[in-house]
Amino acid sequence: MPAPPLLKRDWEKDCVYLVQFPRAGCIPSASPFALKLETWLRIVEMKHVNVSNDFTKFSSKKQIPFIELNGRQIADSGHIIEELLEKGDLVIDRHLTELDKATARALNTLVEESIFWCIVYNRSRNNAWFASEKGFLGHFAGIKKVAFQKFFNNQLRKKLVRKCFEQGVGRHSLDEVEEICKKDLKALSTILADNEFFFGSRISTFDATAFGHLAQIYFTPLVRDNLKKFMDEETPNLVAFVNRIKEQYWPDWDEICETLAMNKGDKKPEPGQVSPAQIEEQ
Image (cartoon, rainbow, N blue to C red):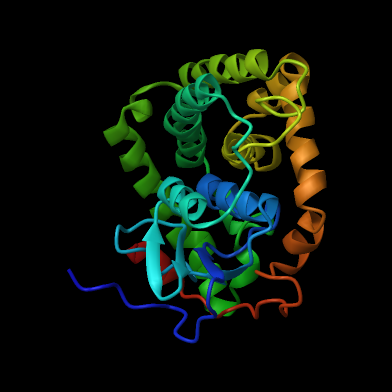
């Protein structure tokens, strides 16, 4: 099977090129998996450059995010981290016991196979914020901006509806999905307890995974405020956890959301460079 074409042809050796969606106005990445991966890269202090996929470029597996490293494309955030851990002399998970690793594996499934779909379900019910300044509207101008607001964002929502129905979560009511998510959040809260991170005072890969998803619930608009209120009232340790990672590893969070720049020093993207028609095709 031929190697997929590279987006970054003039790549620098050992630099990770992280390809992800353009920035959003209320969160650096509206993709839990991209936020997870970029957070992880920041934690391990691995040299990386963010590359916008302009809503049109996906991996050979049709996934986002993906990376390009030394002329190779690697897809799937979990596989990416595993490969980078194997290649690099990284200490992030060395403190974990075998029991910790098994627990992290189970928790990873809870987050990426349950909480993730609760997030997608909410967006399938109402993704209007995508077409606002909190979302991606800053990337569009003129007729493209109008088209994104009036037509293509709704087409995207319909795709999410279909995906949720195929997965199964879309067959539930909003109340039922929120109850599922609340139980998941409570389970995470119980395990986190009074610790700074899920496995004590030292951060791990799973903390990046949890942050990437919990931040979507806490910082992006959902159909209702119930889950955010639940976190505030019933799982305050999760809120503290999210804010702790945000403060430690995302000091530029507000700046990114304001400028929509992919990297520090990048110019603010010019509106109108992305075609909403291309979004609909993916």
